[in-house]
Image (tube, rainbow, N blue to C red; front, top):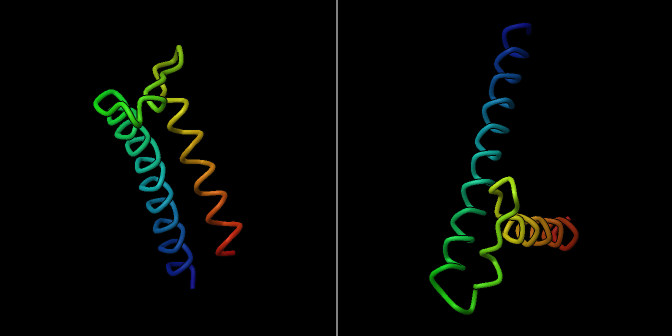
Length: 71
């Protein structure tokens, strides 16, 4: 049982690390798309800390909407 709990903890930590990387890389991809396409131009805004703020906010709103609708 102790080894199973440790393995579960390692899997959870690995999954959270993967989700973290996915969130930040996807928002940068959306920001770069905003630089290339006029329709998505509003996504290209970066903050002073070089974070794609508009893209992160939109991505967060989409996720919250999915959580509310799907449950």
